[in-house]
Image (cartoon, rainbow, N blue to C red; front, side):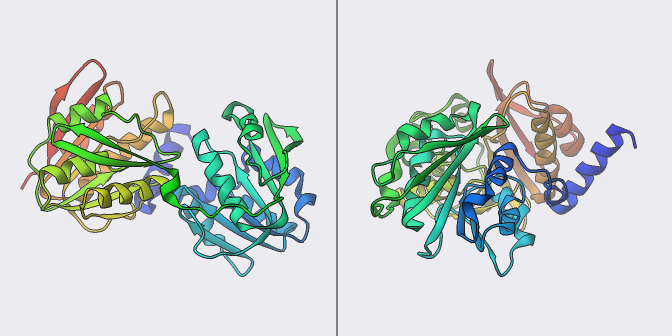
Length: 370
């Protein structure tokens, strides 16, 4: 089958199944996962906890050596990939912490892309390790895994390099003293932020992007904010900057805030509480888990530059937004001006309306016809 036809077929299935096709394509293990399996003798007959796992089936594969496996994903898409495989000896959770106080022989951490999140994950691991329990930290060389040597706290012994393969490193350490309890307030940065709608309080947990100032794209978006009404969706809510500004101007709105990242969702909830605002906040893989139709969608979409998947994600976001907007619904987003939104907007909204732009960003404001 021609590659272009295959790509179109995959995208069609993605649009119907909300990303579930990745269950079929996730059999190949990532390099960090392969390095862990190369050392699976370290977890023979262990009760294992995996933190921040990647988009493959490594937690299930660990059962070939481990007695039981718990897996906590901070990425909702990764959680959905694993969900069909949950069973008696494989327990899966999504969020920033486990719901219980289970103890494990071994905890495996995938070193996070955001280095500031690593100490939190290590503290979480310490909370759930038995005394003397084993900590394994794996990551890609280019992802900063070597930093773990300096980030390990004194309630663990010094980590040592266990293995080095596939451009990845595996470190081993052991819990030597009781780990301190985790309180989210110890891991949050709170600051005041000036927006065109007024000053708001932002609560930013480790691992969630924040500049402690209004980034250029969001500032352009909020400076050209249309009057919104009814049910509004904040897609990719992050720490809740757009949600807080929107509710500052229009507290009567019924707002849903969604993100794929557990720490972002927790941050947004803290931001809303700090400003005495109310909104529904929950995980969604794209728009797949959003509920009902909306009178408005607002977003500074969390898409990266220069990747082919960025193009696909942008196109799907536009297409799915049209399906989620009620008649008269407003679609208001800001995006890097080089991203391929215009063609998709023209296809699905039938016209392209750029309400503001500068040398880096464009604000698109479209409306579903009544």
